[in-house]
Length: 106
Image (cartoon, rainbow, N blue to C red; front, side):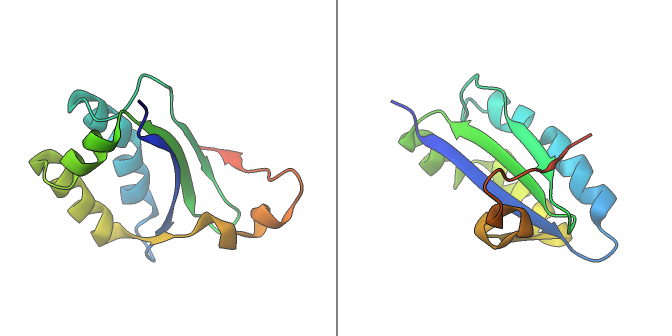
C-alpha cells in the first residue's frame, strides 16, 4: 500500500535560493536510499515567487513514520529548516488558475 503522493512547497529564505535548490536536488535520492519513497519519479517545479514545489510518493504509511526518526532524513530536514519555510501550495498564485503552470526545476 502506498503512503500517498504528497505535494510540498518550500519557500526559500532570503538569499538561500541556491542552497534550497541543492537540497531539493538530493532530497528524493536520500529518501530513496533510505527505502522510504516509491520508484515513481518526483516532479519538481518553481512558482513565480520562487517557491519550490515537489510532488513525490511515500512508499507506505510506515515509511512516513520511519522518516520522522531516520537520522539521515532528520539531518536533511534540519538543513531545509535553515534555508526555507514550508508553505501550503494552495496559497501560490498559480493555484488560482484552472491549469496551474509552473516553471520546471532545473
